[in-house]
Amino acid sequence: MHTERDDSESLPEARLHIEEGTNGRRAMAFLAANDGHAFTRSEIRDGTGISDGSIGSVLTRLADDGLLEHRGQYWTLSVEKMDEIDSEALLAELREEWNEGW
Image (cartoon, rainbow, N blue to C red):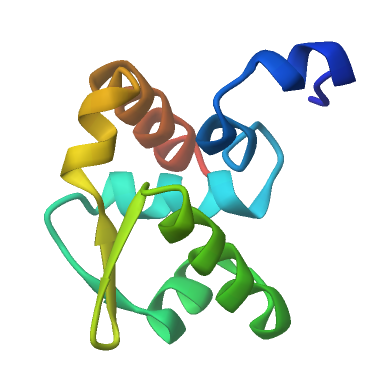
């Protein structure tokens, strides 16, 4: 699903990177389905099927938006940012998408 330009300008930046059909959403869905765990870039790449050439920029963009935390080589959901963007509803939606066989 794409977002019209006028609609996208009114969305918070973080939400733009997790719109339906994006690699960012796929990465977030994987992490939401495995909430409470931290993963390496390679584990997220392998778990999501995001290409090696894209996974680094996807994770960096999500971290820049504050959606992910990065410590050493491990990535996990950012609890602080998730609280700001109606995380319970979003996480439930992402988990459902992942469990339905992304």
